[in-house]
Amino acid sequence: MNLQHHILIAMPSLDDPYFARSVVYLCEHNENGAMGLVINKPIEQLSVGKILQKLKISPDIREESQSLEKPVLVGGPVSEEHGFVLHSGDKEYAASTRLTDDLFLTTSKDVLETLGTAEQPEHYLMTLGYSSWTAGQLEREIMENSWLVADASERLLFRTPMPDRWREAAAGIGVNIYTIAQQAGHA
Picture (cartoon, helix red, strand yellow):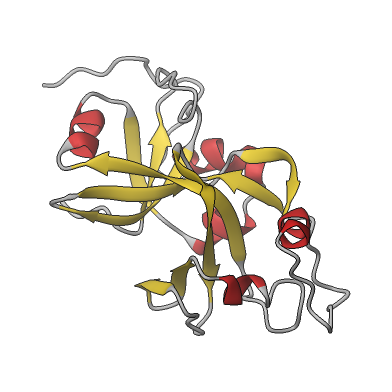
């Protein structure tokens, strides 16, 4: 079972401080483990613009229509000081990993230099940190009913309002997250 380019939807019973009510986009999943980004937990009072300001990145030609007020997200509990940009498009940057035909994960500064300009990716989100599972760990958590699994979509990743992503992700697979049983059995 390869879950790359899928999302994990936290079950209501999952009470881990990082993962309660979270939606995680899985960037990588193989026999060695999994890596993903939480896509619905904004860091309070931290915007993309503030990150660029802290890094002293200020493009010469700022595009007025490109807002930098997007929130920066908590990607997970690992390497919280490192930034990750999940973005659409066909342009690869210095440290881009192609996840699908039109979705990339980039960790290099050159993508940041395009934000707020006409050159920025059409859709993007920025996280600090990421989520990681060792070999077999994620599969066990899924079997223990900690997570629902669904296909990822550009709509959910980039266009669904942040407060609605948990509910909408579950609704996308026909589940009302507020009425689902806390424990599921295995027949």
